[in-house]
Image (cartoon, rainbow, N blue to C red):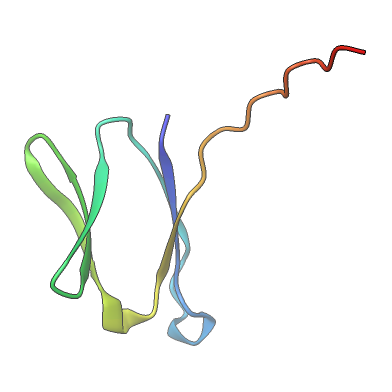
Length: 67
């Protein structure tokens, strides 16, 4: 399931946010990072805000190595 971690610069004193929703997509448009689903925009963050968005999907166990 795609998960997005939104990290704000520390001087803004905002909480970081982890969003878990398989229906969300991330796109970049005219200086905005936009998270949307089939019904429309859910969250839009301006690039000038300085936040970073990281996709942090669940890690899977590595496949066993054959010797």
